[in-house]
Amino acid sequence: MTAIVIAVVLSFSVLVTIHVTGSVALARRRPYWNGAVAFVVPPFFPYYAVRRHENAWAIAWCVAAIAYGAALLVAATWR
Image (tube, rainbow, N blue to C red; front, side, top):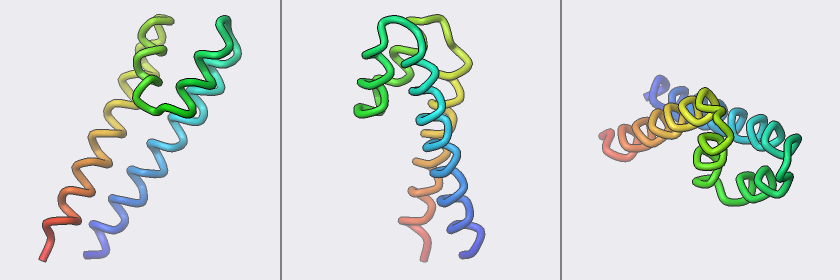
C-alpha cells in the first residue's frame, strides 16, 4: 500500500513540475500567451510544445500524465 501512495505522489509531483517548468519555458518565447493558456488548461501544454518543436517537453508531459493515471487506477482498484 505504501508503494502505491508513493507512486501516486511521485508521479503527480513530476507531472506538476514538468507542467509548470514547461509553461514558463513556453511563455518566454513569442507568442507569450501560449504559456499562459498551457498553464491554465493543462491539455494544451503538449499541443503548444509540439507546435513549437519542443517535442521533449510534450513527450515528458504525456509520459508523466500516463504514469499518474496508471498510479491512480492502481490505487483506485487496490483492495
